[in-house]
Every structure is written in C-alpha cells, then in structure tokens.
Image 1 (cartoon, rainbow, N blue to C red):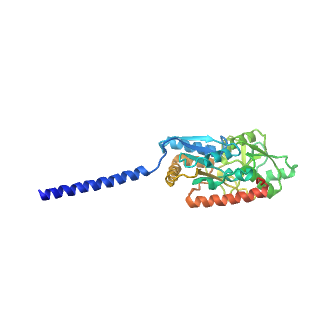
Image 2 (tube, one colour):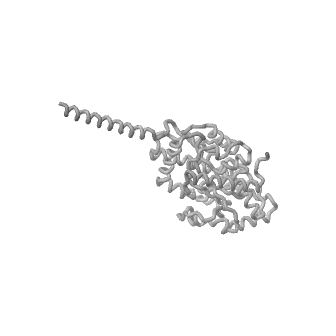
Image 3 (cartoon, rainbow, N blue to C red):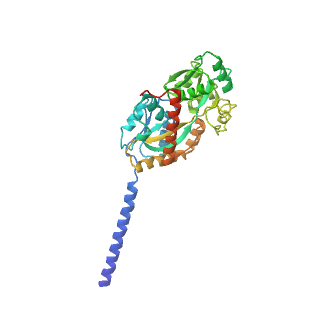
Length: 340
C-alpha cells in the first residue's frame, strides 16, 4: 500500500508539472498580439496617388489571402499637405490598430509649413519600397528625350512651360526646383491634390510635363497618351516586360544618362502612433512580410516599377534620418522652408 501510495503521488506530481508546462505554453501563445478590431491605414494624401494605391492594394491582399482576422480600413486625410493625417496618428498614442503610410511629406510638410511633427513622433514599422519619379510629357508633343524637352523650356520665356505636381513645396515641386537649379530652365509649377489628377491634366494638355510616379501614370502611358523621358534614379528600373508595344520600364533612361543630373526617390513606408508595444510593431512587420511573399505583390511592384527595398528596425530609422537631412538641404536651397 505504501509503495502504491508513493507511485500515485509521483504520478500526481508529474500530472501537475505537465499541467503547469501546458499552461505556460498556452500563455505564450496568448501573449502574441493581434488586432481585435478593424485596422485603419491613414493616407496623408489624396485618392488615386501612389500612397493611396499602395494602401488599398495592401487592404485587398490582406483580405484576399486572409492574412489577418480583422479588416483594414483606408482613410485619406490630405488636409494641410498631409498634416491632418500625421497629426491624427501623432495624437493616437498607444493605438495598435492604426498605421500611416508615409511619403516624402513626412519631411516636407513640417519643414514647409511649420506644423509641429517629425518622424520622431511616430513608431517606425517598415519600409516596403522606394518609389521612382519619371519625367512625363504628352505623347502628342515632339519631345523624344529629356534633353530635347529641357532645351525647349530654356529657349522659351521663363514660366512658359507648366510643370504639374502633387501639392506645393512637396516632392514634385522639389524635383522641379532641382531641374531648374541644374539646367537653368524655368517652369510655372501648378499644384494638384494627387498624382492621379496630375496625369489627367497632362493628358488634357493643361500642363506641359509632370514628374509623376510610375504607378500614377502607367495607365495613360499604356494607352498611348503620355511619354516617359527619363527616371530620376541612379540606375534604370529593372523591369523588362513590355508595358507598351515597344517599351518596358527598363527602356526608360536615367535622367543622368539623358543629360539631366537630378536624382530623387521617395519612401513608401509605414509608421504607427507613439507608445505602441514591440509586439504590436512585430505583428505588422510580419504582416507586411506575408504581403510581400504573395504573387500579387510581385505583379503590383512590376506594374508600379517600385524599387523593392525592405527595411525594419535600426536600418529603417537610419535611412529615414538621412532622408530627413537630404530634404532639409534640398528645401533650404529651393527656399521652401517655413519662415520662423
């Protein structure tokens, strides 16, 4: 009886220990954070532009592949050159169900307007890509190269040629200012609410050129309405599949090749409000990795001709820090900084 009692006691202890271990395992799984209500992606820009298109693409892919239990809601908050969206997220401290997709107005808006925010007010999540800028003209014009077009602008009275772009003192006008500084050409710059509107204006010949992102003008290029002259990057885009009957993205020369020594790429990245937890950040990093692993992402990035660089953590923060310094130098040179 005594031995049997000892045996029963040992079995009881083993069962208790096993239960404790199982409980710890369950607690570990339960600790992994995930959203329990719809997730909002704030777009600090208008509808139809590159940031808006990427946010809505991610929304669709997450839903299609069931990558998250809760749905994504995309909200455009473009007021004040995007300041409305950034201040919304800045004021949403600790909200793990909100993200903002960033473009260069992360830097340009506070510098140009004095609105009090910077990237340091947000929690960095991930860079999903870098967006290119292309010099576009209407396909009915005679200009086949960037040099031909810039030479025509230089020969005309200053301000004769109209350059359309998204917003004022933002990336499109910064690129325009760089063209002017490097060539002596002088444009009249006309701001619009988004890249989609800019492409429509160029098709309608209400402006003479634009520096739109590829995704914002690809439909009009494919339709034969617009013509790309050069890309503002250090190297050609790597995509060789034909977009039109005769050209691929790779066939577009760099602006430097075309005699226009200007380079500029734009962030397509995500931040969260201040005060969120590492588990919340890691959930979205993992989510974006899953999005990037889908065939949809490959198709999307090829169509939009993105530079598909991906960064998180310290590497991402360092890139953003350098980009802020670059934009400060460009905007000071162009006279776009807010007066103190």
